Length: 280
Ligand code: OAD
Image (cartoon, rainbow, N blue to C red):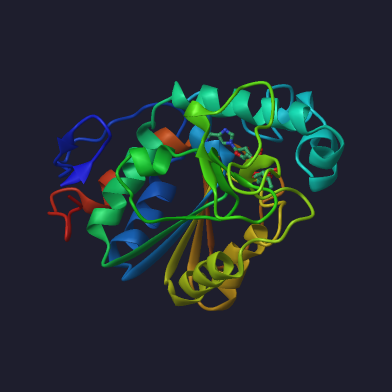
């Protein structure tokens, strides 16, 4: 069984295919579905595009993206936090509150279904929301941290749940008195080495790598699909726009929204089959 956050739902595909928005031509989906069906080890990397249909803004989409409205240097760097901790804090607290009012969408659920069908599955995400977890994938490699949590900026182990944190001011750590900060990776900071190692191990081990809803501009995540391709994997890129995405002999491009595209892809790959495993 896969938990979908609203109870436990058996996701077993029938032959019916749902369509939920813009999705690629059927021939492209069929080619990708054959690759996914035969895969032994699938690694998925998601970006802001997969959460867009839940109402979470992306970063770089023109007009609606967060970096079209805010300056990352003022909000998403250690220097910005040192200069104006309360401004940075309140921006993240506002985003955390927004996330709590969203739900996973069809794209998230398609991936939790995919996880149940393939023998080995790893989900890497650049997203700091918890929508993959709420869609039923308990083991998520969160490359850029977790928006719903704060941690001590002084390096204590103290953590704070953002749902009970003040909205306007960065609170002090209950152990050492330093300021608490969002538990996210800012520009200029490095990812935890254990997290990056897990991501790289999964990237090198997979035979199919799905890159979903990411502009592939922020390292080290941006290189992972191409590292997978260099190690012999087929890379399937799912994106509403293919602008800036690489092409190549082992890259299949599926231009469409994540919800519709992934729903159709997973349905085509596994129609009539039973899931291999389930999560309780
Ligand atoms: P971006 O905003 O850079 O890219 C979002 C991607 O999603 C774009 O390629 C869009 O075309 C695509 N997209 C939008 N809506 C979609 C939909 N419904 N279905 C499919 N694709 C869609 O977001 P990321 O690539 O995730 O890092 O950004 C990477 C990192 O840059 C973020 O984790 C964040 C940001 O600055 C930090 O804050 C450290």
